[in-house]
Length: 220
Image (cartoon, rainbow, N blue to C red; front, side, top):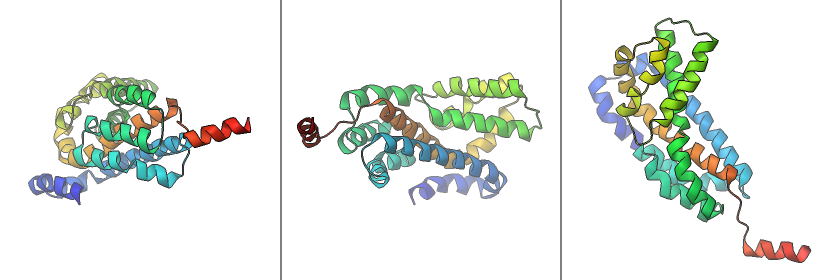
């Protein structure tokens, strides 16, 4: 319901025609972010000493905030709280790693830039070879890191860092990307937040409860 309200003004301006024309791009992009979300959640589940359902419930607040606010930095407090208070990861490691991960490891924009670059190349019937894919991967990582603090249209303009080495224009396709960005942007933010949470969980130690620690000492 919240996402529909956010999209209302954009659809009222452009109509459903542009969405129909870009539907395949939108579907594929959202599917990629959904896969990133699943993989990130599984990483947290493997590191946490609880069920998958408990992990999903614990990460509910940062997930909703990412979709609603479309700001990864807004999700920092809720992400830290979910990892330390609900999932019981080491607080010191979480406080250190997750702000760095959200700032530097921006897998949401990286995946979006790579997908969009392939889409633009196909649109202009530009043949991609091995060197082109290497350029896309490296340039997408660098452009993704540069999106720290940028949202919406500012993020889209950084796509030129990927397209320019390929000899592809951004200006002609930018209007189409802006038209559908209201749909994609929440999921792009979700990709940033959840990969940061997964990266933090992968390096953070699980903090056992005192009762479990005492029981382990008695067994020894």
